[in-house]
Image 1 (spheres, one colour):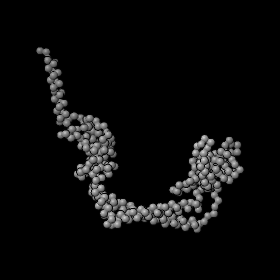
Image 2: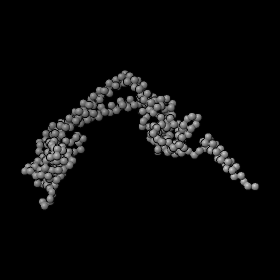
Image 3: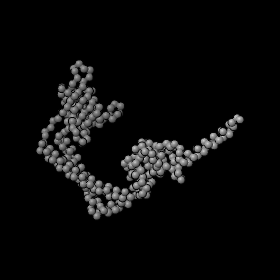
Image 4: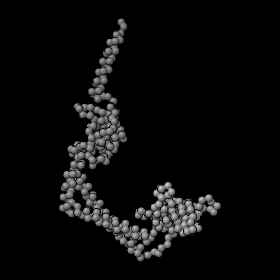
Length: 305
């Protein structure tokens, strides 16, 4: 008796279909678990991420995403925690998200302050915080400290500029001679200030046009038979900058330098240095007080989380 191949094929298709339905509805279909490296640190705000179809699980009308946590363990995350954390307004849901974020990425999200719940709590607590500050005069103290800080910073800058005038910054010039005059050299090169001061140095030049007044023979370092003359000169003072234009109309500033030649008023220098030290000390104290107030504010606002 010959086997009925048509009947066997039909039975096989029915069996395969039944197995597919069973595995699909029982959740036995192989899942694609998304690595945490692909979703961190922005887990919770990933609406633009394209999800593999096999990583999406549907159950009772809810969608969950299959992911691997920071330890490589399998997790199923509600989709709203995956891509809509910014819209969380409920306290318990907020805490649940933070626990989930710690498990998957570790730490706390950088966008924490942008979550609706956090923003709402800050607005609520801001009024209480302002009242608390006012009752302790901290708010007014903060404004006063910021005003004093601005005054001290201005004085510090002024004293440093005055000290710079009394003790001019020393410059070193390196470059190629473009033209020689009777008492000057026109150089194309750089002027480098010999100082670690944070005050902007007006005489700093990088590949620009420099005029060196009253140069010395030792400033020319090239051999006599060299086609071009090169300059290395130090212990120079910046005089001024002339803003001009070349023959093509391009902006071309010219920086003028000469050798240091000034008398030192040591008494005045020591007085300014003492003033700078005193001002800096006061400024440090004020910055510490402001920092304490800001820490107090952070603790107050964080108390609701």
